Length: 141
Image (tube, rainbow, N blue to C red; front, side, top):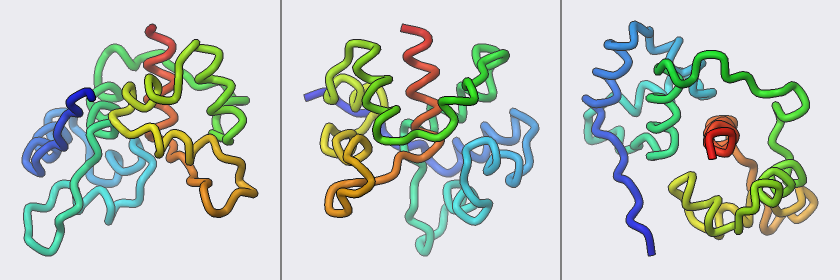
């Protein structure tokens, strides 16, 4: 089993946003979340125990780097449907486990993302942040 990276500390998220010159609202928009969700990632209070997922932290650092400049997601790939997620993964020659590892998540989660939307017991929608990171990383492989 691969050791997954740890979530960032709230002060790391705050410092990265400030160094990048972004407001909280801009950072939330960049990561496809609502501002209250983003705010919790910077909050270091006992009431707010939500931490930023390591894959979203990686995406945040990528999207504020020079590596991201000019990376555009094609219009036909902007909505991560189960079929598109599966065909993208298979097109890259990756198993579910390998794709899950790229996104610092588990194989079961990836299975849920690829399950048909009609399978209400197993389907789980992939967030745009995870989708963007997957496309970016596969473009770089």
